[in-house]
Length: 214
Length: 214
Image 1: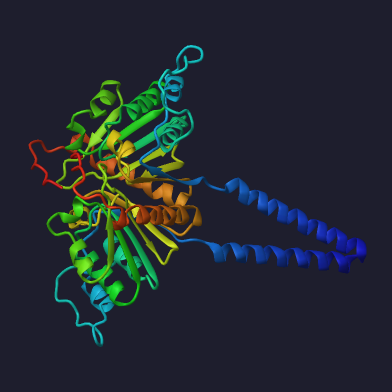
Image 2 (image 1 turned 180 degrees about the vertical axis):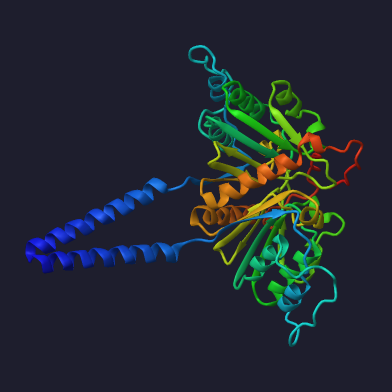
């Protein structure tokens, strides 16, 4: 009787440990970044991503080297190995442009959806990305394509209020939420694919109505 | 021996069921809404929240009664029983204004943080909310207060790209993420309290610089 009880309890313990391990393995990344970002130097991070031969020489700028919201955002994007989906209302940050270009050069499949009106503003990175051969599609609608999200390797979602502009990063009150839970990632992936197909240039009607001002 | 084994296994089963129940009980709400919202009638939802005597009379408008992204957003906000924190760049949707007013009248403690420049645009709901006695604070900064989040009863976070305007709801591509996980809700609550204190009118400097245009 006692031996059986001990065996049963041992089995129960094993099952509980296995269940807990399974839960831990599945534990998804969940984090929030707030902006404006404290100023910090991102030069070495970007130079490394751009694949300088050898170790990049230390940046002489006086900005602190500690992590900030912006360097954490860059690091998450630069972790992409296979794919990067970008769905961005406004994209004019040169540093984010460098990060996305580096990923494209490294062989990551980058696809960009953006807003037709804002992709033409001064400083927009969209033209530069297109010149590198990155696929870009845009709306032809009266409303804005106002999303601001990125999906890394189809499993990490980065979304929030932050437009990818220097003003937003350095001056505005903004948030970026980082999530790996499938309940969030999958709907955003589906939304991206839906918009990607809708904005297929085959469907363009030229000389469409101009947008209303927001 | 057999009886002991059975007892042990029974115990293991009980422990596993209890662990699973505990996990289920803790399961947080996780959802995503996309916009533009399909058109749908929200009149009855709002009339009910406004506490019409008896059952509100059916709305004669021809819009469908099925749920849409906008009615789901309204329903989540109207679920507030104790508190509602709003941190909104732009707030001009009359329906959302009615929902927030109804909550205030029902005794929910509503606090609003908004952007100084956008609270003065045509159709802004901020003046109406203030007239009802709702506490509103705003920035005095060069950058925008660009957040777009709400926290219901300090446990449900509603955040995303959506400004609370008719254009955003009806015309734009937008997202709203709904979350109860403490890893997200707590940082947003902390951010709200931080901003709320920073924007305390006691700290105003009058005749400050005008903002740069975004």
